[in-house]
Image 1 (tube, rainbow, N blue to C red):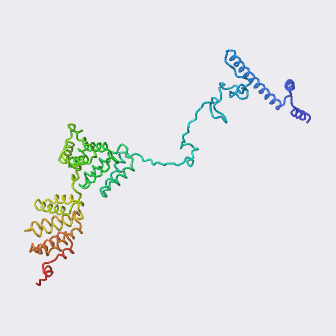
Image 2: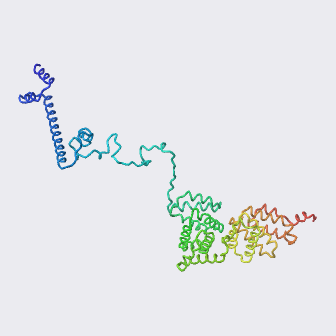
Image 3: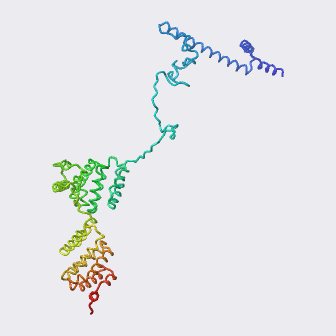
Length: 446
């Protein structure tokens, strides 16, 4: 107990360096006294290091003053290096000012620094959208590649063939980013029309004319036709008349000012492909024939629904007469399809029946039954059109019988034969007027 009391008394009082040395000699140090001694030794070493570094800096300043360089005024604020100097006072580093003398808390920058207007960065985490005023959002449309281009353009062109509205196509194209594939729209539209009807080719020519200068430039059009001239050997596999049709497209485009007149001159003497040469010759001939006409409006003919009724009747009569002479069903079918008037096919039925009534012999009767049967089976003439055509003849039979006395008997024979070949229905056959009914309508009694 006495020994522990002595140790606590030693730890409570402070020791000087001489007392510690004496304790060290006697070998009576406690662990606390030993740790205190080591801390004092470390502090003493740090003081010596600071003194040595300050002496070295003083020597350098004296050497600079001796060499003739001006020294700072000790009475000026800049001369008080001990307080305001930004150089490191720990003896570490190269002795240069921190951040070049332009940093630190409350410091705006180095003297003479000019600040520019800072542009706002939307990627900055501190960016505040509501504090930046009106914000404009732009929709980024990716550019279509070659694969997506054909998948996107084909439905647009096919729908245009149905409605014929060029403004709608223009609006849809402006929403797409065609990029450097813009010219391929013209080539795709022309390729699709080559496989379609004459009315489709007429619509395509109008579309190219309306889009010229708005969505497509002259260079785009020229590039598209140049591509199609090179692809003619492949196009004729599906469309044998492709060279003549492409020549008509080129002539129409030049007349509509969609491509320059110099387009043909660029190919003179430079074309090796026979098909491309035929297309260019076709365009040159059409332009030379229509030099005084600004637009080749009739290069594809007039569309079916836009033709006059008299013209359609004349074409159908010519179709039937050529069939009676040649007997080629496929040609008659092709001519009827080219007219593109499915709503007016009842006129063909009417003209065919009247032609049978006015003919002599059974040849015309048999051939017309065969023709109507083919048109019925292929669906070219619908049930409604067939009924309307026969009903028109029924209604006009009294007047026809004035010129053709045996019209009723010929009509009954023709109707029975058509019913046997399943061209008309039983109801339509039974509604055919007989000679006795015709006489009753005139007031005669049998």
